[in-house]
Length: 118
Length: 118
Image (cartoon, rainbow over all chains, first blue to last red; front, side):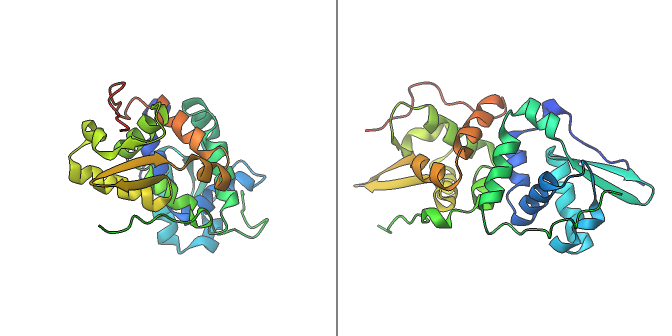
């Protein structure tokens, strides 16, 4: 399995973060993670938002921009928001993004409790 | 001259706003407008950021997403941030975007005093 690469905090760029959020599905993924009680969610529990291949594409965009961290464990992948890193790099931005996604009815919602951590 | 169209407040979408900011030059334009003392800037005073045709492309992206308002007067065009509209639609977002652009050294800066309003 290929290693999962993440940008260092100092290499997270504003334009790349905004590009990662320039899609309603990716905003929905970020919002669902922010509202989940678990720190991590299994990538395969986001299937409400698209096919596995489409989700892989979206998860890659978020990870490469520094918005999320992906952890591989066996055959499963787990995703989490890089909250501490983003708060350190761009204070307040993640909270503002989450509040913005929440106010936009065009951002899809995942049914409550559907995200699975383990 | 074609009329300049702007989305209504209620039609401003989060993903479109983020797409408009997914480029260092457009972030630089937004930051320069936020830091200018004038409410409006002449579009042609942003030439530090690119050729006229490239700037037209960037100004269109920002306007179509609802981030800026463009006003035509004679042969000139003037651009301003839609601060009140954005603050009403997504409270706090514009300030967060400006603070984020300011913290990112990869966002180009315009020399102070270069933007011309009149």
